Length: 150
Image (cartoon, rainbow, N blue to C red; front, side, top):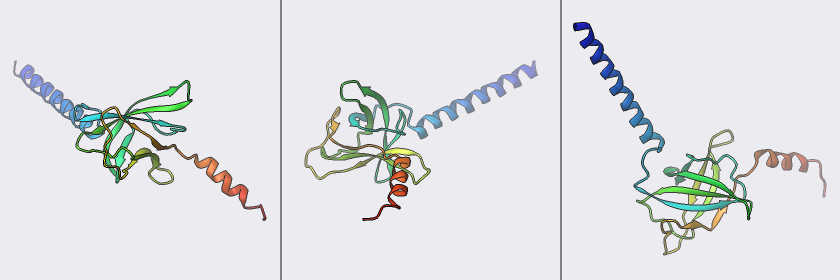
């Protein structure tokens, strides 16, 4: 009888610890609720490295995540939806860039705020976007230009 009570208490403790880890993981990764955020959209010519769950940063601080991506069959551009913190009112002329953490780092979306007195509303669209730069193509340009003379 005493063993079954001990086993039940240990089992309850394990379940409580697992629930705590799950709560912590959803808070840290931002996969929890998006009730305190609003959606914005952007269209990229090239969105290499970006996927659902990718960070959206402003001045190096995470302020949101990518929530959806799809290819527009008419324009052949990557249509991206982001969830951005409601605490921020972004100017409507802000730019959205695909950036990297160093040469071998991960990819994220960086918001460069504009100077407009008007703000992006919920469901608004970034007009100024810059897609990802292929490091392979960039290296090919530099290595190919070394032998040319003017």
